[in-house]
Length: 434
Figure (tube, rainbow, N blue to C red):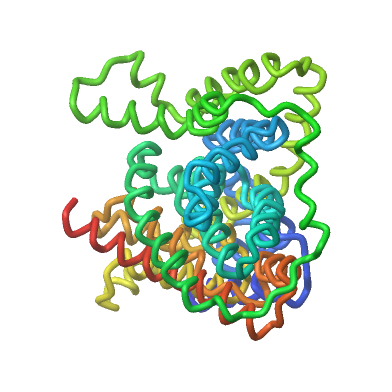
């Protein structure tokens, strides 16, 4: 009976988000309260469960998400992201422009949030399309696939960072494994798949034909741009590798802590992309404040998902679900991926899909002894599956490239599905050797 209540509450959550168009945080809180009462949690104990779930989930993530948003905003506003893209396009030349944009998007996508990266890269894509008379979807889809993959697989993006916290995984190790999974998935869903899309008609807005508006100010230096944008990745990977080859030291442990890494990175970026580029602290404070506004709702969604997770845990139904799933004889990594994929197809949001699936799969993961770092990646891959008409990314791609719904499904939706399947294959391959 308890499991039926849980699935009924999940169905209600999906209906509130899709049919009811309700704010995601409010929907999560309403469903959490209803689930708690129906599952037998005492009314006077329910607020405690909600507060614990919100605090435990957001407490370890707030610094990572907010500081990551500040860094990404500064990378975009300072022109460092555009410098990275311009440098790579010059380096690769006309013949390999597709690869130049793809690599630029992958690098830029690590510190930038998905929506910011999308809006930033689209003018670059279209300026290349018009200048070299290349098919828009053929050039653009691999670039946007890179943004999608970094959003779903790689910390410090909100969803994978939240999953790292929920599963008690290691941020640096997850990032390292994520890169190993992401690169083959990107090549398959990007340049390889795009070869079949050259004939898809697209008519991007002519406003992008005349170049970009970022040329009115001096861009930061190339080395400065690359190092500052990639500093979180470099620090997390270096400290993780050091911990594996040498005895742990207190200062290395502090330097490898994800919030400390992000704090150091934003301090460095404040000087390298801010003060050194002629901006004063008042301008930088405005940029950072805008960044916090950009991620406020993401933080609230994560908090709401944490509340629902704690209600399921406190009621004991999480263990019931885990026990029931054990009889399915499906590998836990595949099961987590499948749950995230189903929720993604219903709700449209990769973040909500990943966090909701994580709350249900966590007890089974512990019982099965599954590698938590790979579990983060498996659910991340599932949360990217089959973007369609209920996903904002689907409509952004359709409208920017001026495609029909049919051609958007044949290009964007297939690309996202390939990313999800290739991601799962990569996770299972890693699991065989780790």
